[in-house]
Length: 136
Length: 108
Image 1 (cartoon, rainbow over the protein chains, first blue to last red):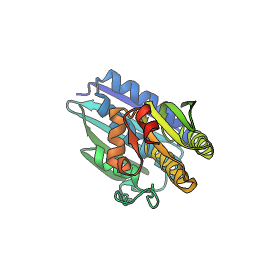
Image 2 (cartoon, rainbow over the protein chains, first blue to last red):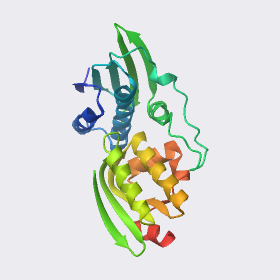
Image 3 (cartoon, rainbow over the protein chains, first blue to last red):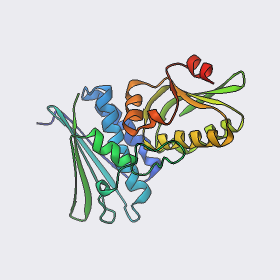
Image 4 (cartoon, chains in turn cyan, brown):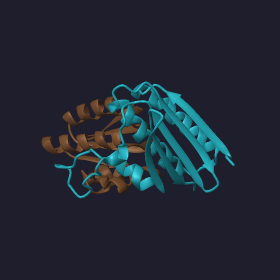
């Protein structure tokens, strides 16, 4: 049974991201999540939502659903843009120095590192990423 | 994002407060890059509770520009949750980090 849940719909615009982060922080506080889990949840949600906002030409909506289920936090991000699996992006080269370091792939690296599991599916014309995080 | 500037000798300390994220990255980048034009810069992030990859991109750009200009750039005062983001991304190895503003200024 859900102890706490959040459902947030927004246009896929960068300008709409601060309101999402505000709501995620409020949710995390109400759900009693630790600062570390709060950071992980907010970061994973922002990286995935920003990816849609900046790269998904044709998307008209983003929907974020978060629920706390016992020792887990379930995060679902859906958009109606063209089919795209953000988890298929290659990760960054973590060993390169300041001169050569590229920023690409860092977002998905955070998603992989900070979640217990993350999965993509295309269903009913929507991209859907479902991530499970440890609730600390 | 609030950015307060303090002169400390030849260096500038930029005290950041808020979230360094996709939405705040462009204005923060513009500010930090313009400050680096004036000399060494320390970004005091003790008031930053959250950094995403867009925020790290800003710090990487600042570090690259400082190196090009031959001036110092470092970051101090990371909160634990933000430090973890630096460690997971490997940025703790490419951007000089200091515990306090005083240590950052002493290191030049």
